[in-house]
Image (tube, rainbow, N blue to C red):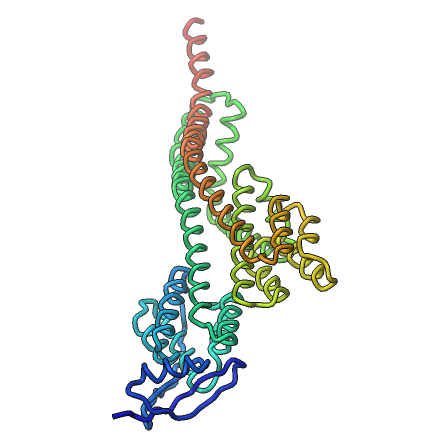
Length: 410
């Protein structure tokens, strides 16, 4: 026997619509509403509904890109299967292992139940859902293609997480080796060098400059270690604050881009992210000016941000965005020409996707080469630092031996 269900939906213009509909099951009613062009928020048997307010206490654990990608793909599958937004959010909040993310999803569910659109509810948690996430969800709501928008989001987040994971994996070995080098150097300066210093003092040996420098550094670390830690900590804090300023970001980004290999890797990674993000936004129906603005906020590269801002101004003046990109050296000529072709053929989103795929392969090749290059390089650094310290300690021994030999012959 059909049951009467009370429903809340949003139409293609984003307006909240409520009503009642008879059906055999909640899933069938939700599917029928979707066929009618609505986005179901809740479908409940009359007199039954989800209740409860969620408060978020102190949150500590961050939400990773991988968790957001999994959430987006699962959410898309549930929406496509006919589940309502409230039901899907309830299931996703219950199954996630990240407590912070679960509390955020519960809070989003409550806002949606109160009548907010999904994008507005997500916008109340900017530390979890960025501008790109919100723009794609909003375009999916307006176009009635929320599931497709979520699938696109999952693809972007998965690619970003994979790329970030590859770079971190390539950097793991050199970072461990660097920590080992610093640990060995600190141990020698704090414990071994002072022993040699006492020996040289007793022998009244004449110390060469490398040994004198080593002794001075060791003496500072041994007797002034707390002050050294404070100075390093304050310096690191000031540097981090400075790097977050607009001028600091530009100078630091420019300095990193001049570093061999690493600078090119940073540029190619930024271009891959920029083209992938802009391609997805345009393909999802986001207006080009809004897409450029959102992309500029997500590339994390001051040079590309300026280029995207100029492209936005160029379009507002009636010129193609490729003409603005030609003025910026951070964007390679090949990319500018391919974007120009995409504008001329009306397939800009497809062309941007091809550029992104190309640079993904370039980044992968560079990461592989970097991993094979850094391993021997770090071994040389480790051997060179420790070896130079040992040589500096043993240099005075030759003068001491010579003095002893001269005194014995005399």
